Amino acid sequence: MVFITIPIQPMRIGDKMTGRILITGDKHGTFLPLFGLAERMELKETDILIIAGDAGYVWKEDYHYNVETLQQIFPGIIAFVDGNHENHALLNRMEVSKWNGGNIHAVGERVYHLMRGECYTIYGKTIFTFGGARSVDKDRREEGVSWWKEEEPMPEELVYGEKQLLRNLDEIDYVITHETPLFARASIAREKPVDAEYDFPKVLEEWYYRMIHARKFQTWYFGHMHVDQWITPHLCAIHNHILLLGDNQPIRWG
Image (cartoon, rainbow, N blue to C red; front, top):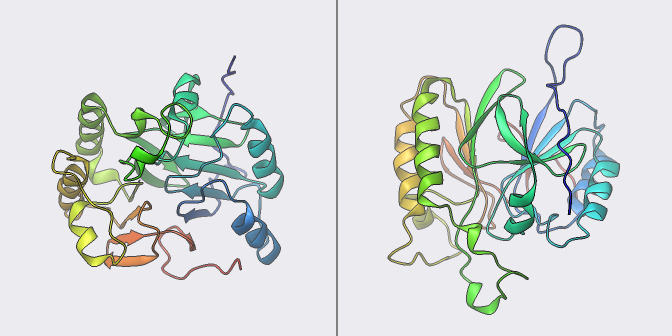
């Protein structure tokens, strides 16, 4: 399969960047919330929707049909961090492009995979992203068909992510991950066990405590837990809700 690198430029109106950034949680390949959003809200080409992992639209070799549907529903850009339920083999075979200061996989003309440990400056806001998590049901999945070992970050990805985080610490406004900082799980009713050797949530907890002292930091959003819940004033679990970045009020789509 051949993947074409799509030239991408930040969107501007006149000489000033402008637009809305929306965020939602795990979609697992469904289009229903996007249809509902399009029916209830006037969407614009300058809108950007970010999915906090488990987007699920890149799952099989014919994922192009999903991408076409997304682009028909949503007139702006849809971007997602990878979750644990993605086809990581397909994503990792794609060529890397640049978008708003960070590396991406251009899945489609207006559908982008936001890569691990990258920083993007979008409409004047700097966003740090880091995907990946461990599937608790991987023993019931088939490797290369419904589960990929690349779902968990490699040590070198964590090193790169931490360097990026520290380098840009005082410029980051928002953090978007799929996995949750470890301490947050105690506040969430839906249990997902953490194996003793699974250190990624602990790493994210360390990053969170660095971020809350950073100069511009506002909110960290994560998916994975299938709840919509504020854990702290700076930490938000997101699933069904669609929010304007930085706004606590959900946008009605259903």
